[in-house]
Length: 485
Image: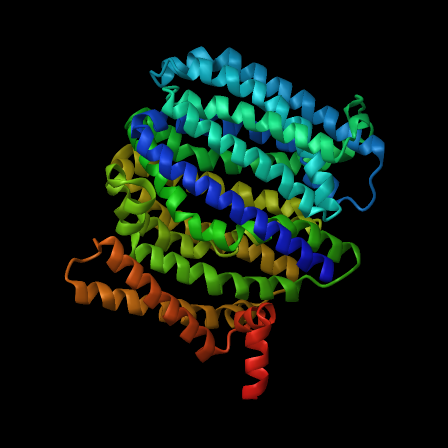
């Protein structure tokens, strides 16, 4: 447990550094480039995300969850990954003229040529970080990720200011990936893993078959709205929806982003030792929702000033979309935990069946919404697709862990009260201000402070388990509580 907590601390620290870096980059780039310029990159990255899902057939999760691994296993994983990467890069380069014609964006041709080189750089260190995760060496992972992210961020901003437009993202990725690969090999000089081998490729493909299929379904669904908006509406609409999701997912990245890198190795280690995952899963849900739900509701209330601060006034039309998406994402509280716990239990086939149900159905609904209603309809559709995905996914997890509905309810009700307590004060501030949701920056800061006060009050009133975890972190609070007792 001490090892897990230490790893969690390192991972959370790393993720917050990455989040701040990403936030600063997006805020500055949104003021340097136009929505249309960003939209071209959004379309390119959406296409790339689908293509990269094929690489999940040689998923690094195979190395993390496997009980024992040898050098031959690692060499085999790298060889299969490198082969798939070569196939993806070649396909992107060959197909780039067609894609550029389909979206009427000639710039996609050089964009994909640069990106195809980046894929090989990524492949050179992705398996190293997978091995480090298996060993819970999150300090080294943090060094690799932070070095690459900071370099990528700085390069993107400099290149954008220099007039590289949407190509800033491609060239910055190339520079950042190159540095990450160098740092990874310096920290873990496992040059022996680059020797080609196909040892145990059947076991890898057996695991990766389901994992790859899940990744393809997820990436296709994830990229679908951006691709459809870019084709049937405009690159501008794709950029607006991309920024909507980015703002809407900030609470998710703040609350879950750091922990999730530790969850799969920790759950896998527990499963290998024959431990019961039911209790830690419910505990994780309780702690996550006490942070996730209040943050999403406050984001929905303060969407206008948050968008103006984060992106600038040229993105104001994103704010009402953020309000819709934030409410929809309340149902996503278990998404990041479900896959790791299913993999740790060896239920990868059930994960595939679940994906085969939720993503095609959600994709059809989303496609109809975009073709018939455009950008606004895409946001409103998430109020249907996200709860649907949550219901189906939780059904599979409950069956695997032997959970009853009342178990989940018992783990969540206190968080619901905390979320309500956090939202009431800023809503009251909006009512008093008379300006509706369009608060000034100063009014938004005051409303945010009130929300924080409501959140603390909710934790105390419900005696939420998160309060105990906070007290453990701060010794002064622990001593004060002991004195009060």
